[in-house]
Amino acid sequence: MALEGSKVRDVIELKIPSAPEYIRLARLTLAGIGSQLQLSFDEIEDLKIAVAEACTNALLYGSQNNRQEEIIIRYLIEDNKLTISVLDNGSGFDCSEIAVPNPEDLTPGGLGLFLIKALVDEVNILGCPERGTEVTMVKYLSEGRVNV
Image 1 (cartoon, rainbow, N blue to C red):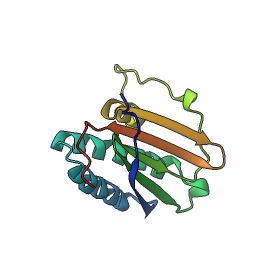
Image 2 (cartoon, one colour):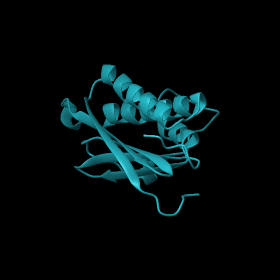
Image 3 (cartoon, rainbow, N blue to C red):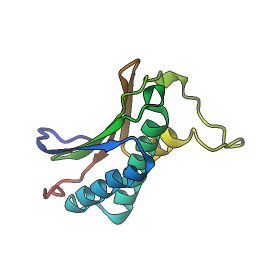
Image 4 (cartoon, rainbow, N blue to C red):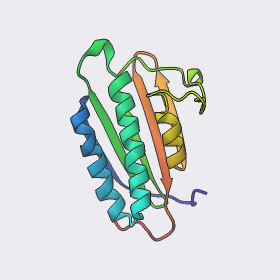
């Protein structure tokens, strides 16, 4: 689905403290970017939920030894897609260890990555032991939508 010859237009990097009250900054930044890219209200809302889930996972699982660390959110705007990466500096994890949730036995937590996968076009999770986790989400754009 990617278009040939994609060029990077902008990279916006946001560093927030690993605290719940700062996740709204990641969502607000995304809302502004989505508006500039002429995404629909529903597309922006879906992406805001996906980013919030990725940031919440980074907050919950990404701090080493319960130290307050930062979460880095990168928004990469290209001609044909918006790529959002959420990075933490926790202990990382093996993605193959994530079990598919049982809809008959849903409990709080554990649904974030599945929700993210349902809301964006592509998801890549890279967990590096002792170096953290990077969740990369891609939203493909239709031609002519990038005005930034």
